[in-house]
Image (cartoon, rainbow, N blue to C red; front, side, top):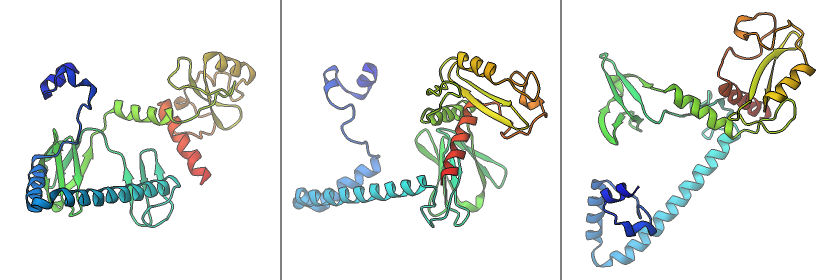
Length: 264
């Protein structure tokens, strides 16, 4: 951090003040602000205070509108038309009006052009006019017109997907299937199992190996003797209730979404 302060021109005695006191504006915005101040001339201080109050009111109104929108989405309804949303872990879609919201990777996008070429960037934005701005290293490297674009590919890295699932699970309260205490997916001994006690596959979560073993002794599987150890992907002796996935974190996150939908 000291080296970074030196690069930015801060002395070692500046640690008591904020690292950056005000948000940084691009050069073009700074030039515009300076020209506006010159136009205001002698009445700048009075008018500047009035403009600042108006800006603060606009910011507050925008924050309130955003908060209302988020509450509507949390209730499972479309903020545009009020119909029920189709929820996925990282995307929500309204089939009635087409409103949608989805998460993008922190970095990595590839825009496919109709002539077969590709433009890669850190991110891209589809603006109101339909044009697409491709950003790389914090600068716009391409401005594309809608008719020239075939599709946009978001380049998700597997590690980032797993991290997002884990962050989602961290906000959940998961109870152990044996002791009913809270189970931490990141703790050693945490176990998620699929087992059939009858004709249908069940799922249970345990906070420790001790709880898991206690459960196994109390509730032996009845479909076949080695159901606890057998790989569900290779077995067809019961009715499967869960998707054929091996990522425990994703399974838990999807369960949370199903419970949320069931409560609506």
